[in-house]
Length: 66
Image (cartoon, rainbow, N blue to C red; front, top):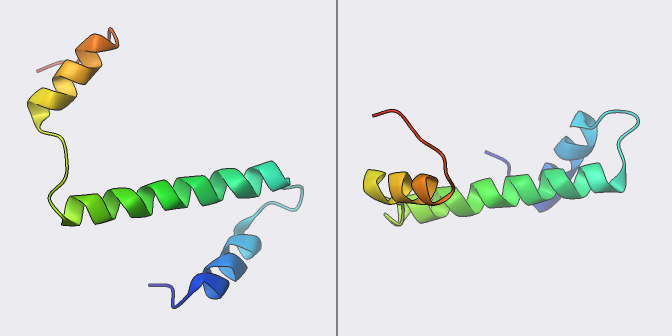
C-alpha cells in the first residue's frame, strides 16, 4: 500500500505515457478516487444487492443473464 499522497502522485507520474495530458491525469485521479470510495463503502457493508443491480440494469434497458 502507498504510504502517502506524495508517493502516490510520484507513482502516477511514473506510470503516465510520455504524451499524457492534464485531462489524462485528472481522469486517472477520478478513477482512483472512485475505486477508493467504493472499497471504503464495501468495507462498511454499503453495497447493492443482486436484486438492486438487476433492477438498475433493467431500468437502463440492459438484459443480464441469470
